[in-house]
Amino acid sequence: MTHLLDVDGVTLRYKTPSSLITATDRVSFQVETGDRFVLLGPSGCGKSTLLKAVGGYLTPEEGEIRIKGRTVKRPGADRMMVFQEFDQLLPWKTVVENVMFPLSVARKLARREAEEKARAYIEKVNLTKFADSYTHTLSGGMKQRVAIARGMAMEPDILLMDEPFAALDALTRRHMQDELLRLWEDTRFTVLFVTHSIAEAIRIGNRILLLSPHPGQVKAEVNDVDRVSAENGEAAELEKRIHDLLFNDPHPETTV
Image (cartoon, rainbow, N blue to C red):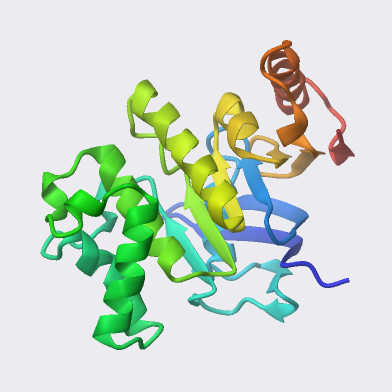
């Protein structure tokens, strides 16, 4: 069976001035079309490094990453990334120009077609009134919505999101989580989402992969998360169970 994304026994290492660091150790998982798949773990577990490898920016020391059965060797338009930082947008371009840019460069769309598609996705993230504004005039949450619109406009096989709401205040972060879920209900895109927040993972994901502290190894995979109800205490119970799996369970490679 061919999955949308296969991460097969991936070990990632990087050099520092004094040593060779192992970020992940033989991590394996699969993502299916339409998944909201979350990589969850404490700081230093390699989840962001793993996301960069899926994006094609890092090469595994061991194992293989495949998109639709094809080995990932370099970045591609089939994988678009949204980062935590607000400076991922081009400040000399307007909102619509930022969203148009990869459509023109990577997709080679004519200007009129690129602009029509860009404005359609800007509307999806409720920023139509700001389409012709420069990004320095926007709030942090609005900038992240532009970044999401830019990624979605490319209609990639998978949207990679590296703690995209971590720098936002609590109220804006909750609002952005709602916005992301609303967009997912509208288009059912596939997302691979990195976070160190258990509550956010439960809110965003339908599947969660738990990674151990450095070096990152698979501790457990939690499925059918979107069936958990917050109203009857199930979410709080699951949050406690995930915390125990991450920090107290000595046995890796379990499925919940």
